[in-house]
Length: 490
Image 1 (spheres, helix red, strand yellow):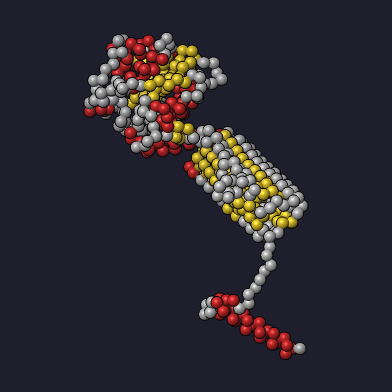
Image 2 (spheres, one colour; image 1 turned 90 degrees about the vertical axis):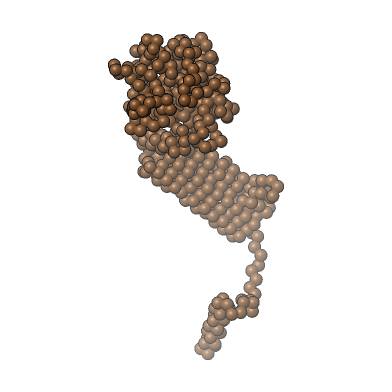
């Protein structure tokens, strides 16, 4: 899962079998997204960074959806199904069946704890191995431990057991040290104790936490490491916690890019997915979202009020108050304000897509401009083109889409409609208001102008008594007075 050498003594088990009823969603909890990835995707990233020999993901609820999301991440990822026996202990037990001959350390992670990264887990793993513990768990001290299993210690301070909240006495529930749901076990003792774990508890489940007390009872060494940053073990059980986790992750991501040389003017209103890439000297202005696999080149300015999803923005480009998806914006190009770039838009270097312009599945060549109030769909535009205000490529005939081709150095008049399929040759020009239905040869001027006809007195005859009729009458009287005065002067 990484270019580093695999750790042959490490296996990672990711628990992703739960339904997550508190999310109140048809989508499995672990597939809800923050930072551009599903929750379980962030956990897989952490596993990858640790370079384990094995990664086993345990699934049950909507197993096909979850399996599709995790398989193919790397060759090490294997999906196993939890059976009808509920509980985290059972989930780990079925994972161990796949690791039948494995005798190293088993790291158990939860698919709904997305903020725990390898930087926190590497020293955790090192401490576990240095102490030769049969089990080491990650814990946290919370002001409000409601909902978490409590870590109970003996008189020496050693871990004695973990008690789930529903099984805790009032005294135990007052303990503020909680189980973060992250464990490291030696595989041999873990297998042996899981066989003895029952379901005699308030939930009727096979708890993985019961293994901790059993190991202690069998005189094994059990340790607990209190995490310094409690947000790193933040679990997601409902939509409120989902948004809290997203906020924490986004703050981390924004800070990372700031330290890498990106100016983020207002971190609180800026959202950057972990999958996005920003070069040094990029400037991100307030209320901007940089989503999914967007890549932004050096010195580009993005925002304010801009959303980019799966876009490429070239060095020195400017994108203001615009929305773009699956678009490519060339170096030193300009987009916006109030532009809408739909999938398939490619804007060349030094090109311009201006105010209130929508583009789709179109290539706009180097130095070409679509400045304002236009729709460009299914179109290829050459270099050095300038389209006048109100240009429309009419690409749909109620049955099929057709392409418009506009050559190099074409200049169009205002309010042109190009009825596809049609080609405008290099260097051609079109007159204002033209409706272009036929190909235009290179260097030609295309016009579709009918002679103007003025019907004198129409308003006064057909709209008597209106303000317009009165204004026209006054104007006629003034014209007649001017004519009389000129005649008298002669």
